[in-house]
Length: 86
Image (cartoon, rainbow, N blue to C red; front, side):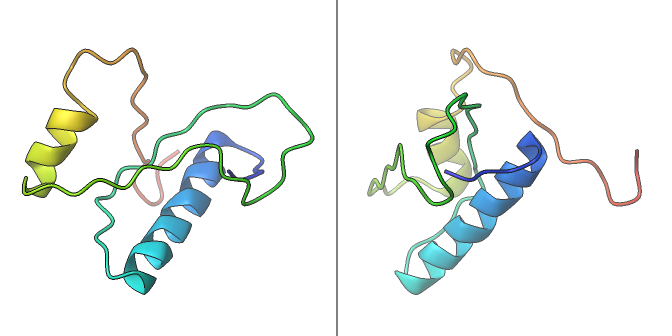
């Protein structure tokens, strides 16, 4: 969990941490970061509220489609803005 000034900043922090964790532990970061806005001031940077590691023989796209983007999720998709866009 990351304290940030925006949702985008929190995702960037999470992606950085996930990539470092994967590299350190000989894992593969698939490039998927999920966010949830928490309205609680007592939680600090790095507090883990959810973690999942799963073994699978699926390829990256098939894995994400099967477990995280099946189309039945009730979630919003966030798209990174291209550098220099507003």
